[in-house]
Length: 182
Image 1 (tube, rainbow, N blue to C red):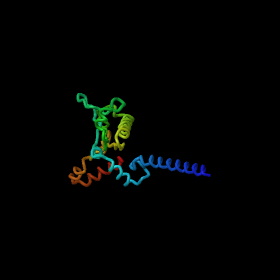
Image 2 (image 1 turned 45 degrees about the vertical axis):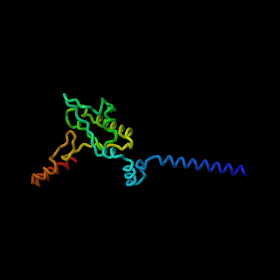
Image 3 (image 1 turned 90 degrees about the vertical axis):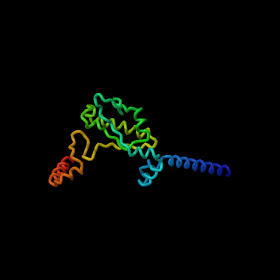
Image 4 (image 1 turned 180 degrees about the vertical axis):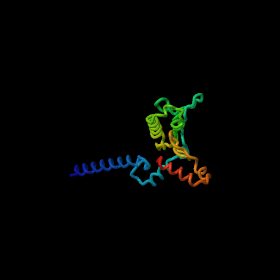
């Protein structure tokens, strides 16, 4: 009878230690990475974990500059690979946004292929998520105050310049054209 109680106590002890271990394991994952948690709680958790440098990095934007003959600038990409040394230097604390200026400049012939741009975005995203402390994904953008900054897009003057024309009919034509483009 006593051995039955000891076995029962031992089983209970093992079960409670196992549940403590799994509860501890679950608590190791940060709340901000839990998609089931409430967004305000996730944001609060993430902001509480971020250093000042990481918060500032989220306000910064990186750019992939076009290569201009005669003007050598370090490239984020070496062929179809990410330049690790430059990535460590520029992305160490994360990054808010990244733009590919070479894709609309007309100078970089490799930017003509959509697959190249997609591959390069995937390289940047994977590096930042895997190699920064918090793994916050980067946002990619290609817009400016006058519209989309992509090859073949129609650009109009900025809003203040449009307003200074004092020509409502012209503005209606411009925005009717923009609706057709969308």
